[in-house]
Length: 261
Image 1 (spheres, rainbow, N blue to C red):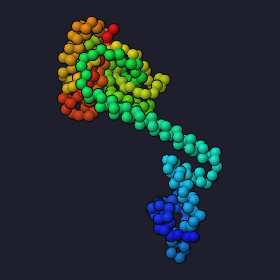
Image 2: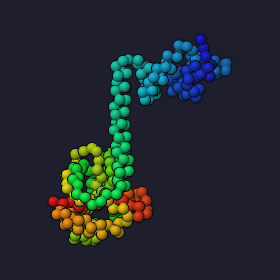
Image 3: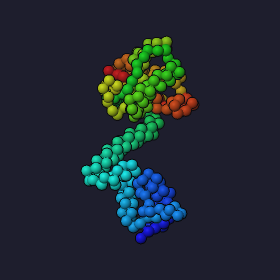
Image 4: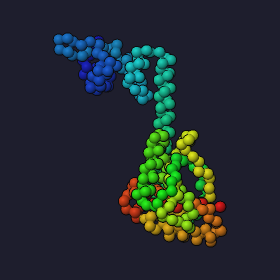
């Protein structure tokens, strides 16, 4: 039995424009075309091919691959294509899980955290260390350089961008600051990533402008003395909310971390 393109579209539940496209890419051509009026006609024998196209599409297989599958119709080739699709889905799931973790981290990172001693786990990071004058513009250039390095390696940060201050904070010199900016990543690449070892730290979450940070560090150092902790000489800052999200510094959220012995 023959069907007009509209009748066939209704029968197989596919839009007419989709049938036109399938014809254009030679995935599903009409059974015949009337030379008198150029009308397209489809037949019952093509319904099975349509069902197979729908089946393969439901698995997320691309149309060009479906075309090859139908042309070769070999089980071994089917297995290869399906296995590749499974690998793609696994990679997609992993990428989405990283995104979920980042979003959850964003929500949890906005909560207030008082001064406390914690053990920071080992981190896998991409970093860039330089000794330069302090300043927002200079830091912005450092982080821009870091993001370019991440992009070149095909890596995504799994948390906020951070700064590791290698100078003793008590001897801070704004004209010469030894800072290593870094981003935590989920994948280790030889020659690209490095490990920041597990470390005991004193942490405080600061809400507000950067101008208030020195006073917060002073409060942390006082708390350390009162609780018997010894300063190890380095600090970290995690920029949870910064200029990338808002220009209002009162909305900034920064984790301040002091390494302790």
